[in-house]
Image 1 (tube, rainbow, N blue to C red):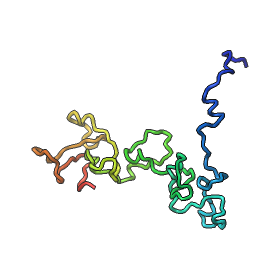
Image 2: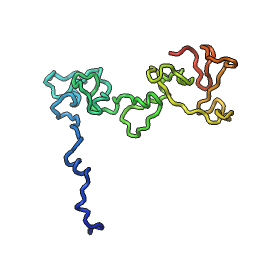
Image 3: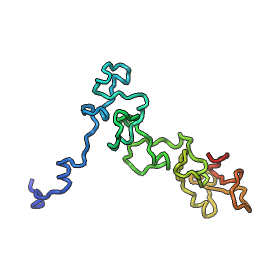
Image 4: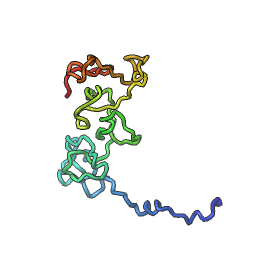
Length: 196
């Protein structure tokens, strides 16, 4: 077949040279590598049947290595065999996604980390849900961003308490300048008790 554009065979992109020289590429942790730090886990050891001990070419992962090392995933783990996390790519043992766990959503469509269902987890911060958490990003509970109901903000929501958006109602606040522990912000996500 004849080329439609003359002289295309002489064009060379910088990317092609990088690919040919494998610039930026690092070794992948396959079982045949010399370093056991990134090697495959010994299947016999996981069943308690490996008799090779320290001479085994595969890594003996303990029970504590149930989660993939997030640093190893990026090629940055410096602990090697001393790492308490798994150095093998296993989709079922990926660590939880920070963004999904903290904010309830992750914008990375190719995120390799676990996205735990928010409905199955009761770790939401009651104070953040009320509007403010004094612990901020250091809070041990999850801060999930919620969307305020636009109808409620302008005065009235026809959906009422069944609305899928957040609606905050201040109770017992008439004539007060400060929120007391008994009266606070309540609404579709009303919580009782003191701040954790």
